Image 1: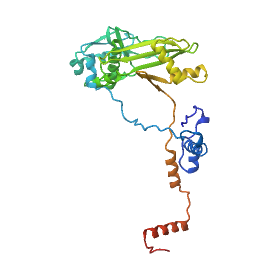
Image 2 (image 1 turned 180 degrees about the vertical axis):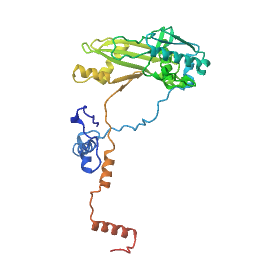
Image 3 (image 1 turned 90 degrees about the horizontal axis):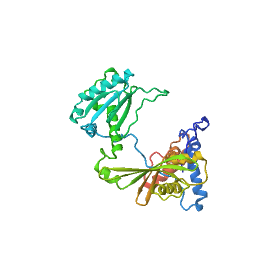
Length: 349
């Protein structure tokens, strides 16, 4: 039983929970849901095959950083290749940054050790490229040059790399996190073009080769059309991609069409809904993983987790500063404990 927060309207700005006192707890979402669940258990228990409970989600540690490639080994995937840095001659800032980047890359011990040839020009070349552009927001002209099979291009803007315009000097530029991110993107794009998995470890290859991965993208409502893509991996560092547009009202027996129909019927099908809602529901499918005949759908869904309401309630009852007790009743209970444990009371008064 989950509670989803309402829209951004001020009418829905309800505090998630207040524990300053028991009354406010009962009026909070946690308190209301607790009372609702207890009421269902008490009054409707006989109608349930299983007693209703809150769905428990494991605690996650969001403080850890994602594991990334070691900077020392990243550039080896470009070894003995040419890296071309190009810019628009009409943009002085781009020319200055490109010149500075090229100079520092040529001087880098890491670049030299991997025998990477650095070239500076005003146009893209076959192989690996970094394009320095000035991102003009709202401009009708697009300065981005598109990558292809022969020219693999990663773009950086003068806005994000402005420090290199002012002669920003590093002892080894390949240790800069922004530059390493650019290199990583180039390696990934190169792998996509060649359909290889160069930086992937052997253990990960052995694991992923057991599965096939599917992606779904909503195209249009009438007739309901979905773009389906499948990617599968082999242990020899190769992977393959298949893609197809599936019209759901057709009964095609192609592999991707069958998978798409299975996802539609078992994950997304239900009462008739509006086109906008159906499009949204397809967008919630982050992906599908298959192994043999089994399918596992991964969905992005809105959820709001609740803390342990019973524990909070017990703490509030115990710690409530407004709670009153009878001193005489307390004395009677203490007297019972003394008798039970054979303790003589020297201060009975």
